[in-house]
Length: 153
Image (cartoon, rainbow, N blue to C red; front, side, top):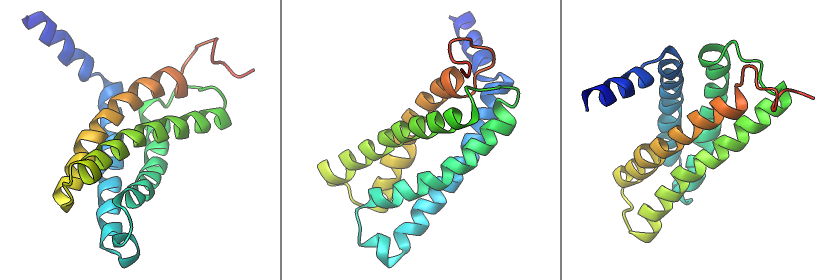
């Protein structure tokens, strides 16, 4: 059992994972601050909270793309810049779907409409699910090193 835990800790503390989590942490701060700021504005306060979440995630996406490209996977050639950005956006939109789905389930289906409930559903549960999805898809498809299948044509 101890060796399994040790292997898991080693996997989760590699420089790549730590850089990804650091970049993601900065993106998370941008996401949460933007989400909560937008929810205080009269225009966004009158709308469904998922609109503010989409705008907040868009801001965080810019931060995390730059951070992951320059820090986490700085040596990765990727599948060509345009394709890399397109895949990054696609996987972020899918990752955003986790946050939106958990927010809608909590807010709309369960009736948990407080700001705290919105934050827990979107910024804790949904973001955790989306983060795991993003890590594996970025590593496999966006910031690749020498994968001939995904090399630019």
